[in-house]
Length: 558
Image 1 (tube, rainbow, N blue to C red):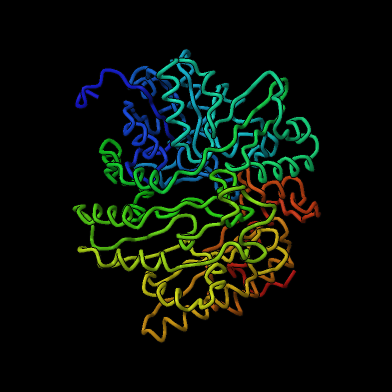
Image 2 (cartoon, rainbow, N blue to C red):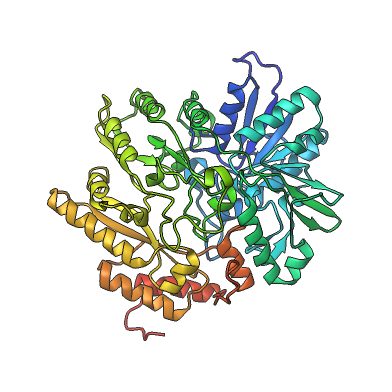
């Protein structure tokens, strides 16, 4: 602050991660975006919540505190899928665990309210976004109220929050009245009066007593949280109503371009770098975000509820300019490690209906690729070729985020697959997630036969091109719908078709706000009402993972 000549900050952002000045970190994006619009912003990263020392370090902000648990939900960051306390944390200097509290958003907010009771607090980030309505909390095994209510604050920003946070800052700067911010799109607030119009979700009491009502609430939330439908959604919790305004419209391509070309250092802040390496930056430091959003709508994925299913992407010129910036970094070795986003090969794709009327009552990629969403990978291929031609760039990789079913929907899939071989760093990571048709259907993932077809095409073309490159699969066990029969089916599939012992196996974790978590809690598919088998025993779920990993030999099939 002294160096910049700032006596007072307008906004202070508090995060559960170490501060990394890189566009892959939400706090860095929000901070730079506000600064680019003339606001003075400070960041308090991983404050000690047991004392006032850290939270009071930058003084009182003129407008508000913004609070986020960090890039991931604090409970996911702190606990394994077996509910064991994690010993490590990739977002912490030195990688040690225990530097962020459980339910960090609530803890940080209480800390701020204790020392700055008169300053507005605005919640944001993944943890707050996915807990904005009453939600099933797997760690406490009960339905919790909206984090807005539990935190005792007035305002929550959900989804990608740049526009909403900027509007809040501008309104507070003009008026100083947090009440006037409740009209901002992309904001959740509470009211003592029932809103007029909109969609009412089953209440907190209803979903606490009746899991079927939770499934109903999740379905309504999924269909109507859409920037182009312009619908208010609300839910009664005790004597108050939690009210969700329609989402912000996605950033335009021009806005995305400006955002990602803001002057990021792309480094860990020196204060935290002195404490040890922050592992989370290492895989993304020289990566490029080309795409936002995903219309895959996988049941277990948080993106549907956090970002909505709308896809936007940056211009080619903007991405090339960012690559030129990266090549000037002293530690750049010539490799762009990844170009993509949630789903890299959706770059250049769109849906004419979705962009005017919002999401229809169908899924874009399930059970098959919609005819209106036409795959066209030419723009992505052209982008990768242009990046490779930039002086100083020796390698360009697409390391993950490929929807193989979207590729196979092309008239000639081999055109893109051949190019993909060039841009794969040895192994291409794909996520079939399971093999059994019933489980895949509940996950809203394509048939595993498409994975096998893509794998065969990729490895055949790689061999013809003289490249030793392979496809590896990521799988989930313990997802709703999987019992021992389905688990053994997955194990046998891997043994027969992959021929290796996979390490990329994870146990399903029921994180707040997803369709899969609604299945886990209710035992129902929210969209069909059909009953779903749910395995809740941690012991059995761990054994399912062992079974697929072939850790015990000579065991009888169940």
